[in-house]
Amino acid sequence: MSLEKIISKIEKNAEKEIAEINERIKIKKEELIKKTEKKAELKRNKIINKGKKEAELEKQRIISSSNVEAKRKILNKKDQLIMKVISEISKKIVEDKKTYQSLLRKLIDEAKMEDYEIVVREEDRDLVKEYNIAEESIKEPGVIIRKKDQTLTIDNRIEKVIKRKEKDLRVGIAKILFESE
Image (tube, rainbow, N blue to C red; front, side):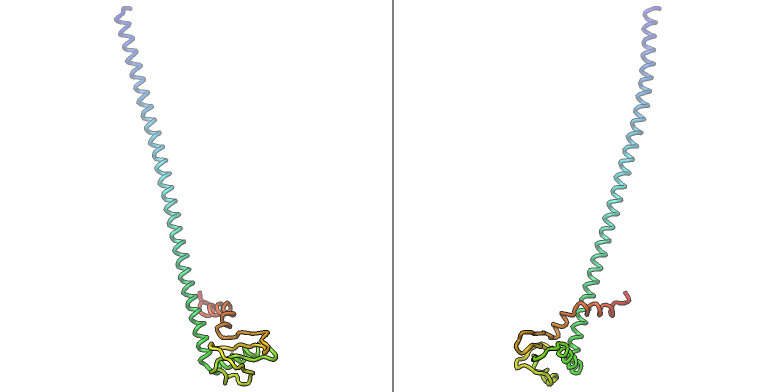
C-alpha cells in the first residue's frame, strides 16, 4: 500500500471518527439540554408550588386575623351594650321609689346584723325611717350598714352591689340579649 493510500485511509478514518464524535457530542448535548430543561422545569414548579403554599398560608393568616378582629369588635360592642343595660337598670331602680325602697330594705335585712345603724342619702331617709339611721349621710344611692361600734361595715351602695354581682349580672343580661346567637 502506498503512502498516499495510507494517508487517505487515515484521513477517512479520522473524518469518520470525528463525525462519530460530533454525533455523540450532539446526542450528549441534546441529553444535557433535556436534562437541564427538566431540572429547570422541576425547580420552576417547586418555586411556583412554594409560592402558592406561602400565598395560601398568608391568605389564611389574613382571614384568621380578620375573624379574630371581627369577633373582638363584636365582643366589645356586646360588652358596651351589657354595661349600658346595667347602668340603665341601676338608674331605673333608683328612679322608681317603690322598687328602690324595697331594695334598700332587702339590703338592710340581708345583713342580719345586731346593734347596727345605717347610712343613706338624705333624700332616702324617709324610705327607711323604721331602721336606726346614722347622723351622717352618703351621696350615692344605696345603704351602708355598720355595727354601732364600727367593727363591721357592709357597703351596699348600688354601685358597690353591682360591682360585686357584675359577673352574674353580665351572664344573665347576655343570656337575655344574645340567647339566639
